[in-house]
Length: 270
Image (cartoon, rainbow, N blue to C red):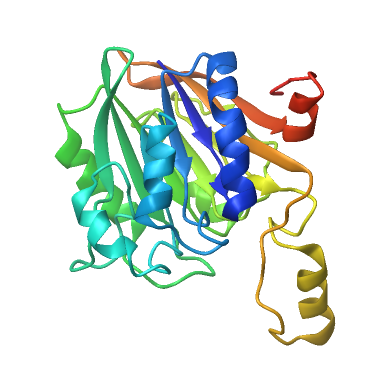
């Protein structure tokens, strides 16, 4: 089983990149399933039901999110209605939506979990303890388990992956929008990367227009609202090969595909 993880999609430039590149990349990496983080897909902040349906129409199997999942109020009822769009499981009880789902891929059962870190982020429920309950619930219901861990601190992300080493097939980090170069299969068989990166304009600052970000740094004031960058478009993420019989990973490879190079006929995912 090969799972393609697509990094945080940033606004309409990111969505356009997904529309143009996803099927090409999926075919190139021979992915059996696609897990895409869509929490920044609506103008850079949040996601709507219409955008989620756009992703599902492109054969995305599961859409994960993070701290911006609540930004568009119209998504709230949809989170209960559509099990394939996840919100972090460790938000307190009473919130709408689901933190995990099981889908079929390559004739096996793939469980996708979404959790959020706490370091430098909202003090929500403990992801380390929450994931233990999720794993207990999934026992016997999945052949492999993968996790989108939406977190800020590299130390928390790496500790979370080490904590789960051998018990899940992959722990991939999202949220910082900067792709890290530390992809590896841990000693007991869990694939890990601290951050998948982002899908959208790498010519900006973490996917947003550079001039607005620079002004905020110079003036130390909020100023103009952040807007998604629309230059140097890339689809980033990683592909993980999983052995469903063991529930662990065989390999992980980073993915970073430039939209312009594809248009020039120079497609390369590495």
